[in-house]
Image (tube, rainbow over all chains, first blue to last red; front, side):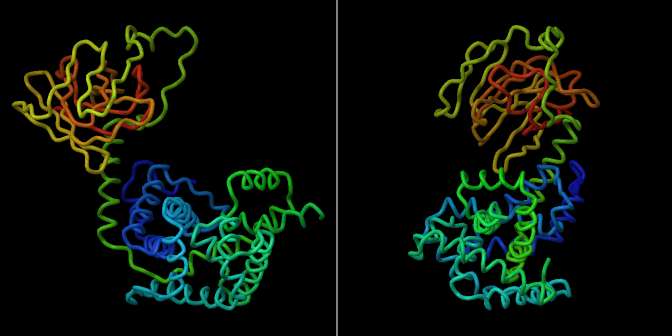
Length: 178
Length: 238
């Protein structure tokens, strides 16, 4: 499916306007610094524009797809940075910083949804939540995490599986599954 | 089932993007053959797809949109200028097809000199020279440049043009910049003007009398007969 007609800036702009908030929020959550988050967001949206924005609807919503691209770009950026920077960002990111002023219903709904998912995530056992956050938001591999928290790799993998399975169940119960 | 058990943990790590590349390839090979694991992964994706949406909302800066749209608009302009197929690879020539050879018939692969200096003269290319960027011509046309921070102008004297570039990035590895001439509604015509300087002046070969725009794209060192990459510079001649 061609989401953005080849070379049509207005079609691209519509996609940008709709998803830039969620995209930048994710980039900021992962990078923990505005300048890097802006670079990551810019790279992600320009890759969407340059690739002709091929989107496969069988793989999820447009938003999930855009956020997947932002996530990959952020991981690339994080892996170019020091472990210290990455760890600090993944530690601090769970707190609400620079909360967006509530301007529209859409933003209010997005904020509520984010709070709900954070609530579900926060209800996981701490050791499971920690490895999930380090992997997803910190961009660490399972081996790096094992070393960081001084646990065997098998333990780390098991916590990731258990945590994701619980998260899925809780999201379904909350009605917050994508 | 035993296979599934063995892969269960790895699927979770995979869904989080936390495997190393070798393990990731291994999981992907397995997924291609195991419907049970594909279904298990789809279940885990429900959780991982929710993770990005947990990020506390932070408004995207207005300046970010301005920067992105400025690149998008200039690239859209280049695409319009170069035609719809400009960023498509050139067709592979059929064996023995002479027509494609004719454009650059005598052109051999060119040695690209060290690019440490800001100005590089490519050996073996007749008919154009690179000069210092301080040259000015009687009529100057601003060019659209796809690369942020880089600038280009086309200076036209009588029917001859000089392209002045500033702060271009180095061409991608194994490529040089090639100049193209285009008349509206027609495919770009190859020229022998190949360069790898970041800043300097490139004389455009031939007359601009029947040319509406001058384009530049990154091409293999021997030049191409049709652009294989989208142009990074487009300058109108009038």
